[in-house]
Image 1 (cartoon, rainbow, N blue to C red):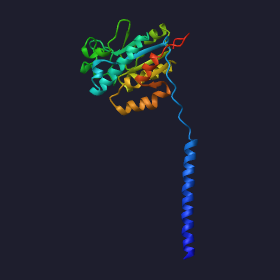
Image 2 (image 1 turned 45 degrees about the horizontal axis):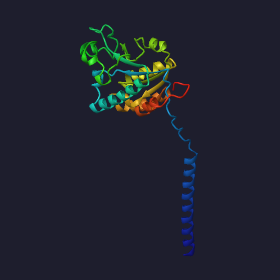
Image 3 (image 1 turned 90 degrees about the vertical axis):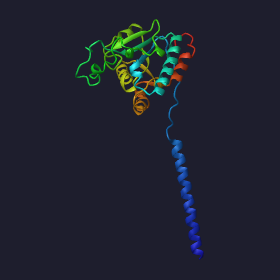
Image 4 (image 1 turned 45 degrees about the vertical axis):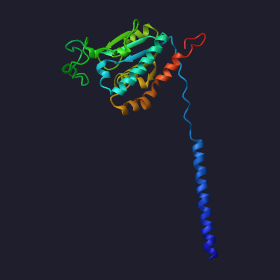
Amino acid sequence: MRTAVKSALLVAALTALSSLQGKQAAAADKQDAPKKPAKSELTIDRGRTAVLIMDYENQILGMLPEKTQTAVLDNASAILKEARQAHLPIIYVVVRFRDGYPEVSRQNKRFAGLKESGRLREGTPGAEISVRVAPQPGDIVVTKRRVGAFSTTDLESILRANNISTLALFGISTSGVVLSTVRWAADMDYQLVVVSDASADMDDEVHRVLTEKVFPGQATVVSTHEFVKALAAKPERGGNK
């Protein structure tokens, strides 16, 4: 009987010890795990930064749920207001086609259907920029015939002429104009800031993956609040940030 009791006590003690050691090991692993680096505060070089607002046209915005439309328009309006106060160049990028769509090849899978639909034709209400974020005197409007902001446009010439090295950009859609422009601009060695909540996609999961997993490899991804806060900061003495 005494032997059985001793054995039971011994098993209980070993079990408790093993559990304690396991908790200590887990705590040590957690302590040793590399910590994510703190996100540095965004700074804006006002003298060399331009804002790109892309494909904020009525027909393109109309493809988004109404709640999403309202949110991105609110955020875009806030960005543009602060950017104008900071005297940053504002460049609108729009996709439009001439009557008859002479720019669209039958071999272009993405745009071939436009000839039948009549969408995004120059001079039509659907191809106009939303009145909530309409261009102001002094703003630049660049018209493209393809997806990315650099393809089929003179955007590069405008940026070089104005000594721009950083692009703060957002648009509709994330997997379309934003992705294409980020890839092209990164290859041309521009510094990039993507405003994630002023961009949107027809697929929320695609938007999430791009802004959280893909874009951070080539751009600084921020919220509207973070971007506006950085623009509102007073420039350093002797600098233009």
